[in-house]
Length: 273
Length: 305
Ligand SMILES: Cc1cc2nc3c(=O)[nH]c(=O)nc-3n(C[C@H](O)[C@H](O)[C@H](O)COP(=O)(O)OP(=O)(O)OC[C@H]3O[C@@H](n4cnc5c(N)ncnc54)[C@H](O)[C@@H]3O)c2cc1C
Ligand SMILES: Cc1cc2nc3c(=O)[nH]c(=O)nc-3n(C[C@H](O)[C@H](O)[C@H](O)COP(=O)(O)O)c2cc1C
Ligand code: FES
Image (cartoon, rainbow over all chains, first blue to last red; front, side, top):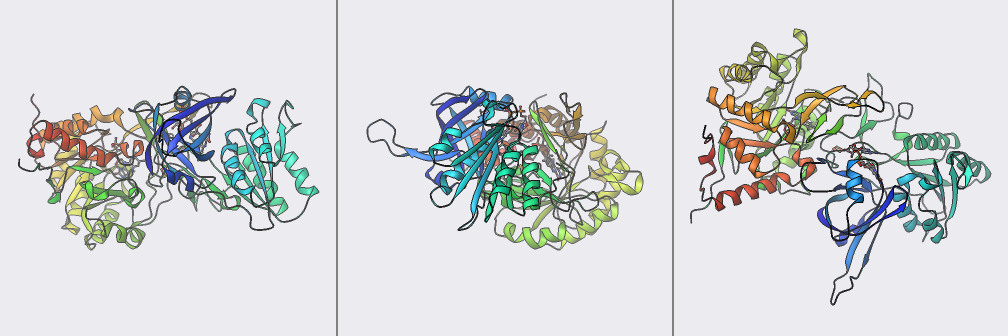
């Protein structure tokens, strides 16, 4: 769906990272964790294109005026990196944006008896938190968070409030253990057995390392990718990534906005990333 | 009051209004069905087809630039047979003319595609993209050499009675010369412009922003160039013109009509809003009503110079 959306709140949650709450039609409640929205941060031709953001949370509230109808919303957790996200960060309560979504595929978590292991970094935690909120009611769950510094580690409190075991690693050791999140993940994978699934979202090098680890341990792994996008609906073919079996003579491109952004890691060509 | 008349004829195709969607920016129509009423727009022009499916270029394929974007999709498409099998059944249900865009790398390929499309009743017209290299003749782009353009349009003309639109490349010194070559080869209409070749650089990595190094510029940034070319061509040839390039509003459409276009195509604006084409039709209608213009055709070529 496409809708005009009012800013309910927009706050800096960690240096350079913001959480924005946007009104939405009731159907937003059907969004699946892993899906994203294309946001037009302002009218006019600059910036020209919409910006894709993962859905961080959905919900509803009753505004504080007499006879107010229930208002539905969704949240985005974003990092200010350029023009579009700077404009977004300057928006206030009652400003408007235009939204297209939810778009793309969501995560497919493990079945009964399978443990879901969530691995993420930076704003990649956004869809994972949304996923954790749904999964925590029914299945065993763990989350591994990586980041360069303490400031890049988001959502720890949110995950802990859900009662989920949360493991943190930072490159400089300012939070959790020092090193890569995949090192902490590997310790966990070899310590404990059982049926499990890894669901990951974060910077590409992290996803690549996670995918390789899962391959070594024979664990099903899903990753959520990023790509520059124009249409968001599978029409322009601007957002592709190389699929498994891709080579110069047998090219195989997968459309990130429509076939993804969530892929089984075995569907992709990792050497090339 | 008499009802407003937004209808136009292009190459013998009756259109309920002059606003079509541009090839490559609207998929095969289906992708946009959830966001736009396909029966409110003039025509759907589908993604460029080739004889065999094409995988396209390496990524990154797109980058935003001031007032526009560059793309080097590499003409990725499902190929004509898959199109007929899997995309036409959807398009058949929509009461809107479908114009099929296609390209080849030899004159024979263009002719073979036209012949195949000639047999498909759902195809209201064909749009020949001549912005492709002729592999048999040193890779010179058909659309930049009047002789090549003539031979490819002539070959297509001989295989089909469908309305034949030729889409011109703006990457030429003299657009009028190209237009005349296509008119001589019996095209029924001309559409212009395709994207303008450009380039963007990422200073941080010291690499081109696109894997293909160069790409096609589209969006509002190219509108003045497109308007100029439509104006020049409309004065030189009798064929109806479909204006394309940076159209995002009804005002843009009106300017193209004044410059001599009979209809227009909306491209990059579909990415800004998937309902852009429908919105433009509504705003166009409002403009006519507000200005007491009963028939949109009054505006075609009505530029005061
Ligand atoms: C499926 C998906 C989900 C995403 N989820 C989030 C999220 O939850 N939170 C968040 O902060 N960011 C997310 N991103 C990345 C976000 O889209 C970019 O950070 C944002 O587009 C940058 O825009 P800008 O104008 O600030 O940056 P600029 O660098 O000025 O943008 C220039 C152009 O490049 C594109 N671009 C730049 N960086 C990226 C990127 N990493 N991925 C895709 N396109 C990019 C922009 O969209 C724009 O077209 C997601 C991206 C994708 C594809
Ligand atoms: C992503 C993208 C893909 C395109 N693919 C095609 C194509 O397959 N065939 C074609 O003739 N033109 C193609 N075009 C060109 C457009 O149809 C149009 O001529 C051009 O974008 C200028 O119009 P605009 O400024 O409104 O986008 C493509 C343009 C874009 C942006
Ligand atoms: S962004 Fe257009 S196809 Fe994915």
